[in-house]
Image (tube, rainbow, N blue to C red):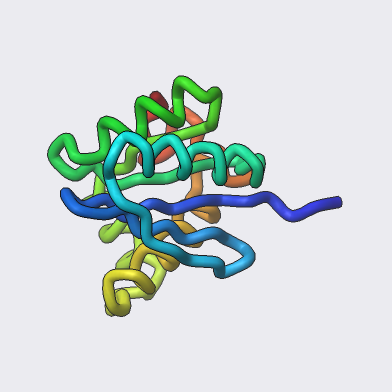
Length: 128
């Protein structure tokens, strides 16, 4: 049985930092429309079970819309709740920004209120 692929995307105004679990693959993508299209195609080829982004004041909207339009399973998480959950399970000191994203993806994948990494109504995420 193949492993489930969970994608975490750290969003900023200038770039998307993408982390793939369980492979550990990481890369950076620009936030231009052409780069978003290329990123969505690359993600589609991976057939992810879940794509996770933290809410970032709207910078996440273009990639979330593109993923949703492509039929990819994308959710936006509340960063405060993810960090609180990390603290609750003893991961108080999340590492540098890129490592933090990968750790948050792993945390969400094992969060109570998820079924095989897909959030249920009791989870900490909102679906798009």
